[in-house]
Image (cartoon, rainbow, N blue to C red; front, side):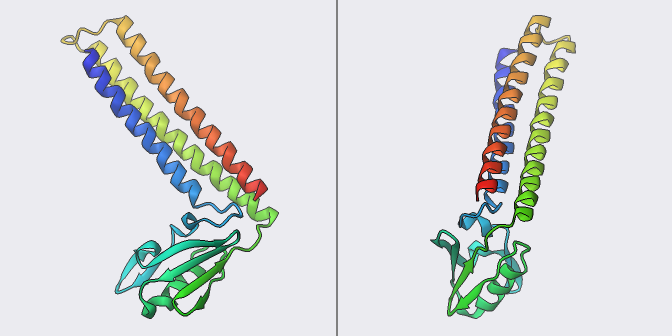
Length: 190
């Protein structure tokens, strides 16, 4: 039975780490006042008859502390890329210069900072819910081993395994809270 628990533990760890990775990606897309290519990750461009991620039709780089540079691969879609960035809901006003689109980042207002902090908190709560869901699955599996007459899991084994699952959960929740605190600090300082 411990081999089964080891496999379960690895699976739970992988799934909880996945929730953390998703949170990191979502946080990367939140603007903090510093230019980062991840800011444009959610932008999708209508090009060649399909809706594509911006990073598949252009190279995004940081041109300065408050400026992104978007080098479009195909000059014929420069206008679509510019429109996609403008209409993305990120509050950006791109300017095309040939195949290069300059995207200045306007300074964040206090109201916008508060909105971004609320969005970060929502992302963190979604990650906490995901981690708790993984914990619930793990606990149900462990409890089913106790009820299974063929398994040789004792009550002590089940208690120990349940405690380990809870410790994994607590560690991931702590990581989420730390990531949120760091992101809120970045947003407020921005």
